[in-house]
Length: 299
Image (cartoon, rainbow, N blue to C red; front, side):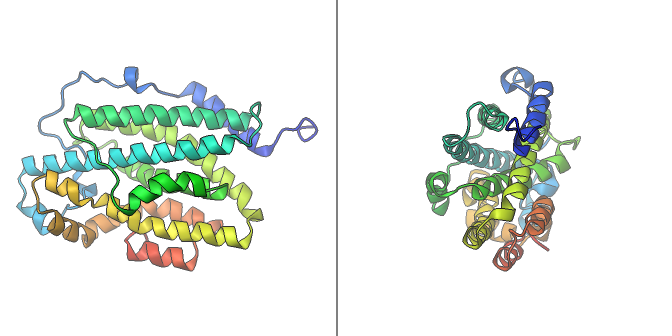
């Protein structure tokens, strides 16, 4: 009967996610306490996920210097989140050109885009609220930001969505209940985790559905893009400019961060669930695994 009425399995998934959006969605303008004072002692990210945690530089830093570094790392991650979600929305909007505008799938895609727009507002306001300045993509990242929306299709779009969402989501889930975290940041993470869970489900369902019919060249293309993501994310997480703004030697700080076993473990924890999923659906090829291991996202 469902087939006769034209109900596609993906619309059933979208319907469940739409129902969830009705029950639990947030408007950061009213659901964040923007007037609450910042705690003068608490960090803006938990120490164990800060890139220099445990390094010789970290050992020499005072609490005030560590707090400033955590503020800059937060601003860096949120800035990356803003331009990533900008890219994702452009890809999703382009995909909608060929979709039935009456379908539940289209309606959830638009709902997700609305969520991402609110997330960009929330990230931008938090950067401003903590007294930091945004960071802009540099070098090859600029090319990716401008080109990706035009070269990615179908499974590439959803794999790109997962790359930008799951690693950050896993780290947020790990740290958002830390009692030493700034309350404003903890609230941001809880809102983001709640809504990203639906986005991740949407992307995973799309990949699992489409991967069976992917031609070999598209499967290989996705694997190559996924491999390239590893050095881009590693460079993003260790942005030299955030160390400079924190009053450190940018080149030496980046060198220590890239070889820091504590930070390598944090990256592996964040990427573990995504790596297992991509491997299960056949999108984690040998090149991808080698790249992820080299850049610290796989053990």
